[in-house]
Length: 430
Ligand SMILES: Cc1ncc(COP(=O)(O)O)c(C=O)c1O
Image (cartoon, rainbow, N blue to C red; front, side, top):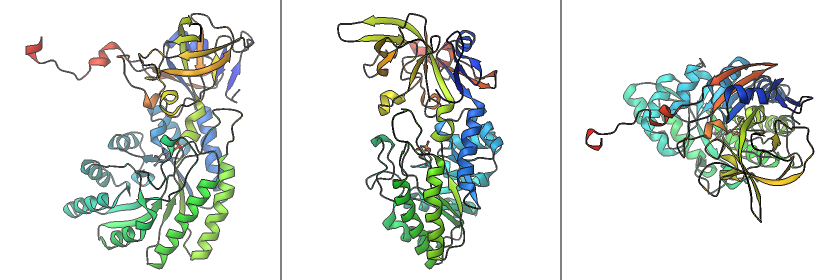
């Protein structure tokens, strides 16, 4: 069991000291439940791992992992900046009160409107392509406004993760190839409206070995060294996010400490080798900070036995939790009202979306399950609620924040009215 989860004498699963069965009764299902303390704990663990070894470290939490406002406020209180990738995420970062110097904008295919907004707000703009740089140059010249910029460099390493989660392969759509870095920086340096401040990489997500980080960071530091020779001194080096979490207990994993112990000595030695001024090190963890802090609760509606399988049908599907269908992801499941009960049968937990790919958990050995039981999907804090949709015309779920026995509703369950909000039917169709 995770440190913030527990089982009461009556067999009810708890999170942050709160009974999940009671939460499901009060707020209905499907329901995301997030543990505030756990987010704080993971943030501090990540930050300390690096800050204990290096003087200047900044964490820019990756908003894409979970941008529920309450979560963003917790991280702001902890001192995190933001890694954002859309105008919407710039809006959210401003909304929670982050100052622009704590925000880096790393989207790909940024539109001119997004670039304009980022410029106006004064956030650091991390280019994904030379074309993007040229477009910002035009915008800056027209507005006579200066931008702090960096480039996302693709270091061409294999992060040994799911193909959908690998972003730093040679063929990947992200960043500029390492071979183009010199040209890109030389050109950017000539632009009077650019303050060329840093270099960035993000090689993928759910990475469970330090090796690809070390390989990619070595390349990045060598590029920083070459840039120094060409007169481009960098204020920050951003190593992106990607540290994986333990979805499956028996699979390999790494901790931020493992990564810091591998990365910081490398960075220090490259600083010496290339005679660099000590840069600030940025990290952009998303999953590591919020991933195991939340669970998803779903109610068993239907039980179906065929000669081949036993299906436990629940009131959630890939519209609520996409990861199993999209990435083939594994989420440990617990029968939340019978958490201590002995395991008795092997089942598939089927979602309620009308698609055959909508299986939330396959071949799980669980206690005997009855109609009305409550299933908890663990480790659903990252890329969970944020990827939820209204597919099959189901309103988005509610979200509750728990903390040391207390709880607050932080996202109301949507209603049917939300399904049609903003739509118009021309008079001739009525
Ligand atoms: C640019 C960037 N930074 C950070 C992250 C966060 O990654 P993770 O949640 O794996 O830490 C992502 C997500 O893939 C990303 O695209």
